[in-house]
Length: 198
Image 1 (cartoon, rainbow, N blue to C red):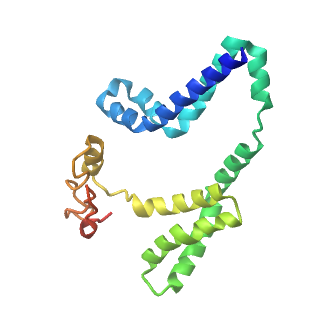
Image 2 (tube, rainbow, N blue to C red):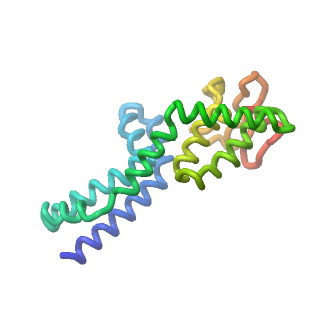
């Protein structure tokens, strides 16, 4: 029975890994089949993959070895570290922490000999992740991601950009106009850095 559970667990892990790499395809299918949009979007989220397949594993263990064995297995796992990381990430993404870090980064950026927005971007990419030494790495990366997201993904980017990406345009998004109306976003087989205007 132990060997059967191990084989089933290995198979479920393999399927979960394949599912991880298929999330982009599922996201595309959500646009192609709007009737099943919610389902495809749910299973197209990487965060859902291993949680979903962990539930399948516990159900398979219950079917093979019984509910008490499955429950014993689940209770034998240590959840302290994942819960700690989750808690720290939630706290790191809170408004007071983000405002404090943003104020500190803006103050440092003003002192830099380059333009302030550029300095803030570089500090977000370099200095904030170094905070992982003081706090946990997931918290530092959460702060960096939340601070950099508005700089990279501006709300004014037209819908044509998203459509070019979703349709797999050969030059990816070269067909999309930039925020200022010029041909602005051009990342295709090569990087057209002169035209990149996000």
